[in-house]
Length: 291
Image (cartoon, rainbow, N blue to C red):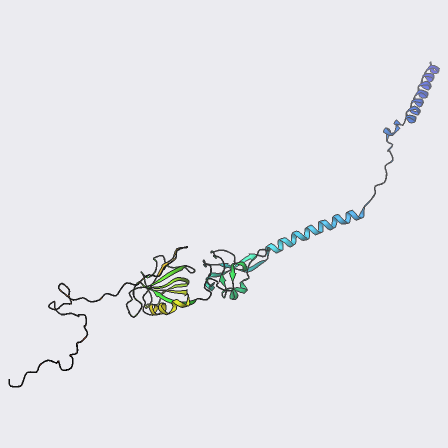
């Protein structure tokens, strides 16, 4: 019995050895823990350095944009509207802080230069002033003469006048007299330059001070009427042409029945007549004394 067991064991051992040898020859032994050869990795230090540089460059650019957007500068903003052709007053400018992000603006330190310029386009309230909005001269008022007027209520539109508005100026009946006849066209094309009210001035509390630019040929009559306070301004619509009109004839005093100036109506002034001078030798007859 022992011999047979040993034989079986020996047979089993030899069989197992042969199977192991067969598996090893077929190459399946790699699944038992053996690894296949792997080629060594090729390192590229240049690409790694480029990636690092790109990362650093992006970080620096982001930091610059954040710092630039946070940097504030003083710029000029329009405080109230200014019409084209009007000189930009200092009261129409105010200082604002903006981010220096590349937008166009005029620095607050240049406000003194701006007050000597004129508006090239309509300047609206809240707009950021740029150099393209200003011009060194007033082309519309070029070659004109500026005249100051003191207008009372009724001598200008109820809504007032705005700088840059074109108006026609007429003579009206003034309280001081001495001006042109009422209805005379003083200027058919005047441009309003500045408008200001009397304010706290008691003598001019109800008057509006208006500066107008007129052609030189209109200055003589206009200044005469302005000194008498006998000027009225009317707005001329766009495309409207004002033609000179004939002034109304002066009223002459009349005499006769029914009028207050005739004889027998309590006196009054009559139209003077030229005196008649008697011809030589035809004088009135004299009455002899004592006759």
